[in-house]
Image 1 (cartoon, rainbow, N blue to C red):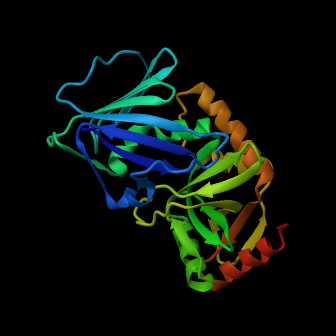
Image 2: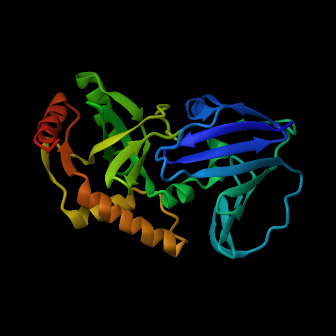
Amino acid sequence: MKSKIYLSIATVIFEITSEATLHIDADCAEFCSQEKPSPFSPEQPQLIQVQLNIVKVSSKIDGEIICQMPQCIVLRNENLERRILMGAINAYYREIDENKVIIEICQEDTKAIIINTSLLEAFALERFLLKQNALVLHSSFIEWEGKGIAFTAPSGTGKSTQAALWQRHEGCEIINGDRSIIIQDITTQKYYIAGLPFCGSSNIHRNKIMPLKAIVFIEQAPQNIIEKMPGIKAVSKLFGETSINKWNKEAVMKSIGLIEAIAKNVPMVHLKCNMEHDAVLTLKHYLNSLPA
């Protein structure tokens, strides 16, 4: 009898089946269920069927190599993708059609598969999110007054520190300490932010979706200064902090269009800040001045 688990991440639902027993790791527990969850947008359901097979030898690997990285080789077979993963997990990802995937896993345990973030690297999440007008942004993400604020910047700049300051002084909940998903709802033309299992070293990963209040670009400084980020600069900064399949021309062009729409319609804030309470007060005053 096949095991079945549903994995829901933002706009995408994965229906995972396997002849092996499926176990859920703590990092993914909040995102998994035995029953099919409701989609983010009923008008745009995205259900991906994923069949997990444990194998000693993979199926025939064919297709045109379009990208080669240390831990992943990407191939194109007609209009479908195939990926060979080497590293934390050894797997062969193979698209059967736009909504069905087979992932062959090479592992010693032939009876059980653990659903964890290492395995999710083989799910091509960013590819399916983009089809639903969503992008993964390198950011710390908090909930404030029912809306999401994303702090983004290169690693080591202070995103997690700013999120922690808001938690300490404003009682905000940190939804994810390292990444968030930015969603464009094409039906309403509104923008949302969602959590995902991947969370870096923060170990904070909540499964929540809420309206997006602002994206805040962090820069360390001795004094706290805030200003609106110019559109073209915001596009450039967002592009640099977004997970994009740069080997896929169509994906790059759609990502750019989505980034431009986000920069145009969501408040883009440049916060030069220190690590004190005043950094929170400076940003809070600015956000309170924005239209509801």
